[in-house]
Amino acid sequence: MSAVTRLPEPRFDTPPASPQAWLHDWLAQALEAGQIEPTAMNLATVDAQGRPSNRTVLFKGFYETQLTFYTHYTGRKGEELGGNGAAALCFWWDRLDRQIRLEGEARPLPEAVSDAYFAGRGRGSRLGAWASEQSRPIESRTQMEDKLAAVEERFAEQEVPRPPHWGGFGLTPRLIEFWQGRDNRFHDRIVYTRTPAGDWTLSRLQP
Ligand SMILES: Cc1cc2nc3c(=O)[nH]c(=O)nc-3n(C[C@H](O)[C@H](O)[C@H](O)COP(=O)(O)O)c2cc1C
Image 1: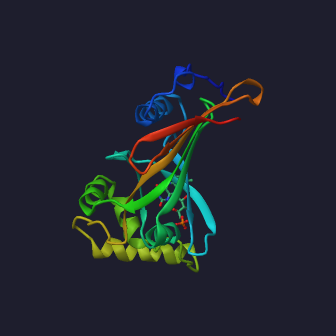
Image 2 (image 1 turned 120 degrees about the horizontal axis):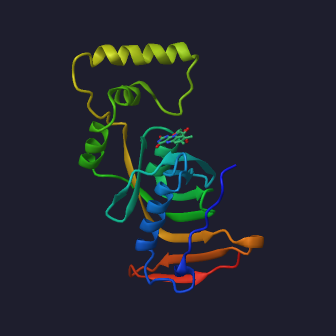
């Protein structure tokens, strides 16, 4: 098992008024920490009855102050986010013994932003986005491969445009919690909550 490195974090003693720089720093440090998937984050959504579901997606950078990820708009999470937008994200970095939790609203990114991201994906991934009706049942792997073959034929020798059912979401956080593991489970937690005026209030939570 690889060793945990608890990096010094003076911000737990004197938290800054805004969490933005702290968030950027921890994401950057996670990229350097030797994690296999440092950008993997758990994404929770809720359906119209308030029932939650979650799954892992990859963080793809900031759009303004929003955390972005890309997916199918017509899959389960896409439809739930299209319905009410309520979402929560959670990063966990075992190498650093750190967690960041975020809660807020997720909205589709502007089409031009999704187009630019999609254009940078490999051709195989672009074709796969057309071939999959995410979250829908299918009889067999063979049928899935047949769907991919049909898409390959459709776009043979042409660029693969972004499918209208696929693109990015951006989550605007209204709550961000920084969690640092400490000895004897006496962990540090600082939570920021955005006020309606757009400022942040912060509190220290018991572990
Ligand atoms: C490490 C990892 C990264 C993933 N990244 C994404 C992603 O960025 N976008 C995505 O749509 N699915 C991603 N998935 C698959 C999702 O976890 C999920 O299976 C899929 O999006 C369907 O979710 P849904 O049916 O709730 O909509 C990833 C899975 C893993 C394990």
